[in-house]
Length: 476
Image (cartoon, rainbow, N blue to C red):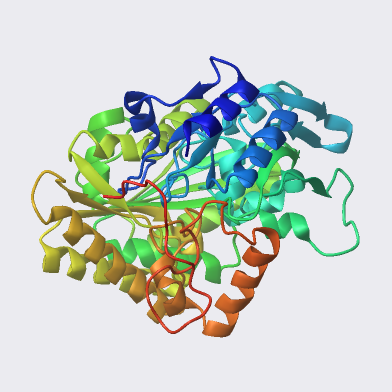
């Protein structure tokens, strides 16, 4: 990127609206994953109009663009592999409209996930998608990655709660998909862009669905001396036709780290626990508590607890949602995976993770959305030790390959990004990848939006593979 182009971009956002010094750019070369690449400039627009101007300048000078929210992503989605320009949405952080009568809100992409719920909880409403990073992650990033969270089991992921999008295309054109209305005719373009990982357009406004708070919430903790018994309970609950809003599993390694950090009341001597939440009408929830108690005890749970107060419930969830931070107290670096398996394959997947752990000599802890089989094995390693990062990546790839082999997927909510894109041809046939690539080419014919993501980039016979990356990226 030339100095002339930088001056043009800076003129759009003003003297306090951009960064281009090396020490500042270093803060934008990474996200929550393990890879890095440095941008040449970061800009912070305040409006859709400024985004349009920035995009048109970048288009004229063929500058790659990466949209960025809070940088909490876990698959390298916000890492500028080809250098170029990062458009950060931190200053586009306003809730523009709240319409409780129609259970809708319109927000800018830089709004923090939890702030939507905080804005409406006094009126007994909430925003359902709740990633573990919801106190920091932004809605724009949630839309890009189709983020999930513990309550995905009942409420679904981000795409189930996004009704409309304002988008800036790579040539600067502004378009709307969907809207406040329900069941609009035509193609579901909102669904197409949600989860497209910033490779098709930049999101500048989002219409989200708001939900009314339930009449009763119960949080349960089932404690086990066997990981297999804990995993089997998930299938047992499903077999009894019960659908909790959340079923989270933590293994013994993770329990020790979480309890040391948060003192949330988790047993440090257990092999595993299930954190289960029920919501709904009082009578139905009370009945389901007893049904789940029976299911857990039938699978040899050593103890079954029901949170006695909102404070106890919040503390249990604090332990779950602060788990990644707790790992940082024990290991200097860790690598989080995001594979998915059918619920019936969870016990086998955990045994496979144990095998991979032993093979590579790395500790792997497990915390995941057990209700929908979304695994989050956390591979602990020391990046300062030669070869440790490579071992962690190899271990992660073996785990994902196993997930595919039993009918699962390489991601449930973190996205493909640059972490898993070379595994896409193990998950999908060439014809499917060709179709995905056709959408990419349709909306971004020059391949400048978030290049090097989602689709494979390595050498091979498939024509869908992306062109080699160029630019001043520093990938390491």
